[in-house]
Each structure stands twice: as structure tokens, then as C-alpha cells.
Image 1 (tube, rainbow, N blue to C red):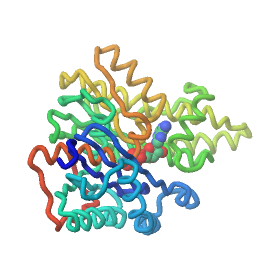
Image 2 (image 1 turned 90 degrees about the vertical axis):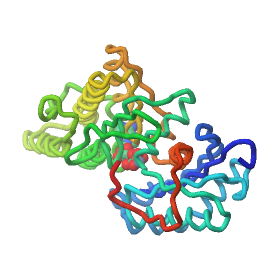
Image 3 (image 1 turned 60 degrees about the vertical axis):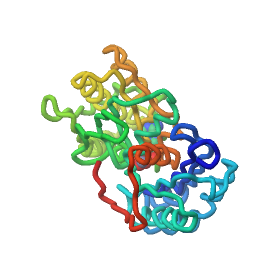
Length: 338
Ligand code: KG4
Ligand code: ZN
């Protein structure tokens, strides 16, 4: 604790954001630099892994310098380095892991490899400074849709997940089909505000009774079938109505299952995480449905919902406090499980 506070540098490169952040005592964000590649990948309609790795390589050093500079600290002031080592794109992960290892070695700083999903959950510690486990977590992002029981800081028990597409993936695919472009989530969220969620009866997929799993791949087919039948009938398509109806079919199921999980496990709090946690309709439905059962819903602000280094720093801090350490032989694990 060279500065009186315990400073963790968090590094995140699992997908298309090159991000680094300095967090004090696992809770207080001192800097949060996120260099997004969205403009580049938009041209291709989705993330191109090879391009993502190359851009991470180009930007990593600058992002690290800015994260330290914005926090007003030097590399020697850092007490711990946390880096995402999975799940994610292997080439992208490797850039962050290599940068973290080089800095840890050069400056003799302890290193911790962080599971990206644990990072998303930890984003809530940065926003809600009094939050402590136990709680239920709902992680909804471009790659994941998971309901996770969190009994302690470093304990995560997955209760359910998607059997095919992740929620964000479904948003991105349907947005492409209806011509809203990439990334689809925020665009559908915006368009849906002008549309009628009951205009089109998209089927809600709950799977077997009591299941906390999800399935969203059929929604893209439903949307395509609807567009084709309207086209054949010579009717104009109201994109806002399609967006609102599709969004409702996704977020209603997510909210129902998350609240069900909390009730069944006696949890009084649900924390939301991941890019789709920014969805305004999901936030509203979660609050209404959980509120009716006396359950509190917490969520990070949008900048902490999507991928960032601060959430990785927070998760690393709690891992370190529990005695976790990672050697310089740390490798990327693209398919890392909970
Ligand atoms: O957590 P994230 O930044 O990256 C990972 O997947 O790890 O999440 C990105 C995903 C994208 O699929 C994006 O379309 C979705 O989150 N997203 C949203 C919203 N904002 C971002 N989906 C629905 N509504 C939003 N407002
Ligand atoms: Zn993520």
C-alpha cells in the first residue's frame, strides 16, 4: 500500500474494447479508460477477431499510460495488476495478458488473472460501495446470459444460462435483420421506445417448468418469418414495433427467471451486469417484478455495464484479499467457465 490506498490496475481486452483502469481499495474508480473498436467492427457487421487483436496491440500501451495518468499515479504506485484471461477471443485476451505480465515482471507487482464474468459481477461493487454478498446476479451480455448465485466475494454458482444465443447476440442479430445495424442492443432499445411491444406476438421461450436456462435463437427466425410474411402481403414494416415486440419477448423472460431464482434461493438482492443490463426496458421490468416480491435490484451505470478495466480491478482485489495469486505463466483461456 504505497499510497495509503490499495491500488489495483485492471486490464480488459477480451473482445473489442481495450480498457484499463486504476481502482482504489477495490471500490473506488480513479481512472477508467475504454478505447472502443466499435467503429471499425461496424463496417463488418460484428467483431472480427483478427482485427480486434491487432487493434488491442496498437492501443494497449497508450490506454495503460492514460489509465495511470488519469489516476495521477505511476506504475510503481500500483499494488496489484488484474487482467482478464477468459472467456473471450483468444488473440484479444493474449494482448491484455501479455501486457499485464510484462508490467508485473518489470515493476515487480503481484498479478491476478480474472474471469471476465466475475468482473461483470464486481462492477456492482464500484457503483454500490456498501454492497456485499450474498446476492443473485444476472449477467446479460453479448456472449453470456447467466443467472448466478453469489454467496461470497469469490464464490459464484451458475444456476442457468443460454442454450444457444446470448441475449446481446439476439439483440445484435435481430437488429441486423431489421436494418438497424451494429451494435444492435442500444439501437433496438432506442427504437423500441417509439414502438408498441404488443404489436407482434413473438413467442416467449421459458423451456421446461422451473428451468433457469434460456433459448433465444428462435427469435431471429421468428423475426425473419414475420418480415417475410409482411413483405409478401405488401405491408409496410414498422421497425419500431418490431424492435419493441422483440425486446419485450427477450426481457420479459429474463426478468421472470432472474426473479424466480432469487425467490427460490431466498436472496433479497439481484445485481445486474453486462452490456444488456443497460437495456432500459429490462431495468424497468426487473425493478417492477422484483419489487413486487420485496427484492431489491442493483445495477451499475451504463459505462460500468459494458466491458471495462475497473470491474476487472475490483474482482482482482477481492481475489487477492482471499489469497489468490497468479504466476507469470498465466495464459489466455478463451472457453473459461465460471
Ligand atoms: O458486456 P458487453 O459490453 O460485452 C460482452 O459481450 O462481454 O455487452 C455487449 C452487448 C452487445 O450485444 C450489445 O448489443 C448489448 O450488450 N447492449 C444492449 C444495450 N446496450 C448494449 N442490449 C440491449 N439494450 C441495450 N441498451
Ligand atoms: Zn463483457
